[in-house]
Image (cartoon, rainbow, N blue to C red; front, top):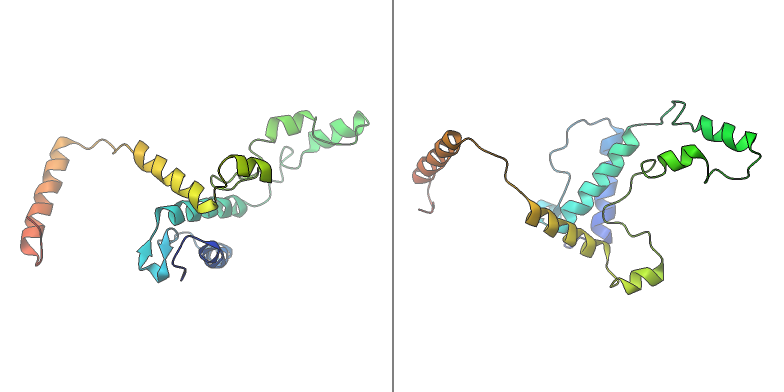
Length: 167
């Protein structure tokens, strides 16, 4: 996107790129998250916001679940047979409501009053908090000591052969 900040412009420009990419059936996208200013700048908050969008698009790409459970047939039968007027109390709803829809990791679905009470956080603020937590909690994967030594040796030798390297 061309935006300079992880703002509304950044979000809609990224979405307008991601959606046609998804609809085209693309199965690998290298540059899908975090870019600002045409790729000249990267942002942790924008990365989290874009990863959230990618997860939503992935859920969309799964298509429509035509199974018995996906079509809530048991709920339809239960409500009809019990002469009820809604599905909220049906066993199917109780079993599926937490996983039926994608729940954004940065979106806020609370009331305005609750949003105010919780500090009036904008999407990019919540995304920055997620990125900060991910970075704080990151644990490097285990690496065999011999492989680590060989990689460090390779990097040291490679840097020595390149101009403007640091010792």
